[in-house]
Amino acid sequence: MRIVVSGGTGFIGSEVVRKLLEAGHEVVATSRDPRKDPWRGRVRVEQAFAGDAGTLGKAFTGADVVVHAIQFPNHPVEDPSRGRTYLEVDGRGTEVAVRSAKRVGVRRFVYVSGAGAGQGRPQVWFQAKDRAEAAIRESGLEHAFLRPSWIYGPRDHSMNRFVAFCRYLPVVPVIGDGKTPVYPIHVEDVARCLADAAVREDATALALELGGDRLTMDEIVRTIQKVLKKRRPLLHHPVGLMKRLVWPMRFLPEPMLSPDAVDFITQEVEIDPRPAQEFFGFRPRALEEGLREYL
Ligand SMILES: NC(=O)c1ccc[n+]([C@@H]2O[C@H](COP(=O)([O-])OP(=O)(O)OC[C@H]3O[C@@H](n4cnc5c(N)ncnc54)[C@H](OP(=O)(O)O)[C@@H]3O)[C@@H](O)[C@H]2O)c1
Image (cartoon, rainbow, N blue to C red):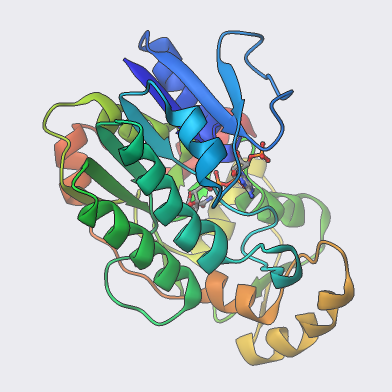
């Protein structure tokens, strides 16, 4: 099959590309910069921009399936002055992508949604996911939405920030009371599900939540410390205080946090990962095991 991974150079997209190549498919990856070629010629890299029907349509031409994994740089910190917002890139961007896919005859659209989508939640990141899912559903294309919880792996920028905190700081800062539930899942396990959803005949009209074991933020940090063999105290910062403290970061070119991003990372989203585990036929690796593989 010919499969286009839009956002194929990203954290999740590149892992999906790798899985699809291993399975023997012809893979095209999109990027804003077509000179990027981490696969040394084994993958065609097509230039495409979120929200641009022309470049997306060209990249999708001749494909059977699109796996859509585009997100704006430095997410979850939005930068409206550069068009880097959830509604623009993930919401409208996916609407344009699915219309472009349909126009050029793509059969199936697989979308990397997120935990908490599909519930009509008011935050912009959920609104964007809901808009994207609605457009895909209404397109009439075969489709699958996978809604992962927190994804980690060698190239991630969020779990690995806590790894650095645990390695180098005398105390580990945690925003909130540390009891926020998360279902961390290794990027390879997410990519395995996405690659499967791209090609399985029965993976149509599918919406599944992806996650590993339910852990609290404190348990996640303790697991990182266990793997690193470093035990340091955890220092909890109230969410309201953190939002005020990070506000001035807006004057930096690539701020690490924003008040909205604090809300994003401390939000409570419970999921049920069992239907996906049943459908894809495997249980994602435990966090400790996944971290030991690369730390
Ligand atoms: N990471 C998580 O924990 C997590 C959890 C749940 C859901 N998700 C979802 O997974 C999807 C992918 O996230 P990710 O973490 O893999 O993101 P990422 O590593 O930041 O990758 C983003 C991809 O989007 C491309 N891109 C960025 N801006 C673009 C633009 N304006 N036009 C076209 N392409 C653009 C990038 O390509 P170039 O830079 O090469 O142009 C890159 O390939 C997102 O929808 C996200 O919401 C992520």
